[in-house]
Amino acid sequence: MANWLTDFVRPKIRAVLRRRETPDNLWTKCPACGQMIFHRELAANLFVCQHCSHHLRIGPTERFAQLLDPGWVAVPVPAVALDPLKFRDEKRYTDRLKEAKAKTHQEDAMAVVRGRMDELPVVLAVQNFSFMGGSMGLAVGEALVAAARAAMAERAPLVVLTAAGGARMQEGTLSLMQMPRTTVAVQMVKEAGLPFVVVMTDPTTGGVTASFAMLGDVHISEPGALIGFAGARVIEQTIRERLPEGFQRAEYLFDHGMLDMVVHRKDLKETLGRVLRLLMGRDARHPVSSRDAEDFDLPAISGPAKAK
Amino acid sequence: MSLYTFLDFEKPIAELETKVKELRALMQPGDLSIEDEVAKLEAKADQLLRQTYARLSPWQKTQVARHQGRPHFRDYVARLVDDFTPLAGDRMFGEDAAIVGGLGRFRGRAVMVIGHEKGADTESRLRHNFGMAKPEGYRKAVRLMRLAERFRLPVVTLVDTAGAYPGIGAEERGQAEAIARSTECCLDLGVPVVAAIVGEGGSGGAVALAAANRVLMFEHAVYSVISPEGCASILWHSAEKSQDAASAMKLTAQDLQRLKVIDTIVAEPVGGAHRSPREAMDTLGDSIGQALNELVGRDPMALKRERREKFLEMGRVAI
Image (cartoon, rainbow over all chains, first blue to last red):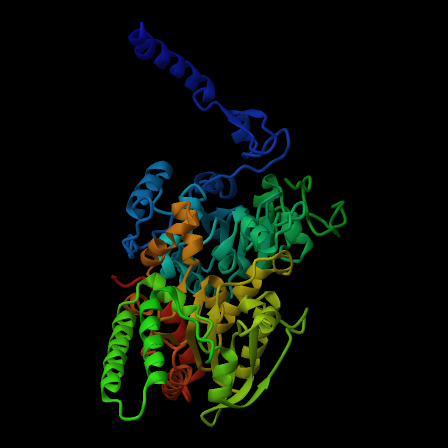
């Protein structure tokens, strides 16, 4: 009996349960409101929850598709030293890298492409939070440098979408050095007279915020995105106080003067295109008379200003 | 220093030195047998000290780097800078004493000196917020660096911080932006920038003052992306693994010179800078002087270009 129970019944129960948990990934649970969202609806809604407007985290592939006209091309990123410190914590860093590559099908945490945004040539770099928390090590630094060089070669604006927990600890001080390194990349773009626009997406913290993310000519974010330098836990432990409601969310940063706008994902492409055309001295693609716009005199917080 | 603090791993040395002191107190002039014994013990203590400091583990170096007896910004300025004239405030919000800076004469040459100050006793530690700066500290640093550039003064920075301050007000006022702008400013200056990691080089709060033409680092200082404790609690899920984290992170001057993150290692006196602070300060003074001699008078654009190229190449070369 015991054999029949353990060998046959239990696996069967498990299999049934497992199937119920993820019915072929057709449904996604909104991390904010907990409602189930059908995958096709989610994709059609740009991965924004139709129930609570929560902006889900998405990767480079989705971003490129959402922000660029069809036909973008990858900007090659030179290979970097893998695991320069031979780092090992509870796992080998090389194993963590392998897992992240298998999971995301990407080389590291930032992907760069050349493409057109409403016909305007741009270089777009997108950080991938699914790849080791988007963390910045040699590879992310190299990707940003490559993106800067591509922008200069094309005389195109550089748009970066950030998403990272911070620096990649497994690369030690070399990851810290990516802060000045990416700063130099940004300086090159700016000195070439090209716009550097940053979209800080959920979450952008640590050394990434404290380097290239905060050096944009224009700072945009999505509603509810977590943006900060120190982690909430570290701050709470330091000051022994509860943090205020909405602390380090995009709307909080907007109120404190760190962002130009908080833009709903559905308006992101149009907003970026408009800003870049204005900065690059190009004619408007979709001319809008300010007189017709109802909210033209307001700093643009579009969509419901939602704090998690 | 009358109340000398010994680190845990220095205990055997401390015991020997106490014994020497006791015997000395008992010793009568001409008491050859005790004199002989004392000399032997002294030699033993000295040898043990040398041996210990010749092979400090990264975790031990972290403790040495944080030793409260190490010279601090105010000590360096008192010993190495004449006419020091502190300048204060970021002209936007406030004055942050975690970063101190001002004009002065270093070996006859007018310079701008900027650095973290941790404080030396309870009162001054509170005043200097333990060397953990807020946005206004970094914004003051930017202001002083720009002032230096306007009058073609070289910038010398002394880095000694556990990191930028994690607090509500700091986040509110844009800690990340302030750090980013300070790093950017370092990389933009048309005057020589010499940085010295004199104790703890803690993360973004350190690099904001250290994107320099020459980065010097004391033999037993540490420079890292996160504290070993922080790294251990995130990657090992246990702060008790700090020793392992310190080793894995390669945060010592020796490792960082190999990785080309720093340019020069500055030797410390036997037993560390806290044992002979004056000697340590003078050695650092010599190294800073040498770096300035190499850089002063160079073309502003070349200084800027070379500094940027150095950081652009960092980690790129085969390691």
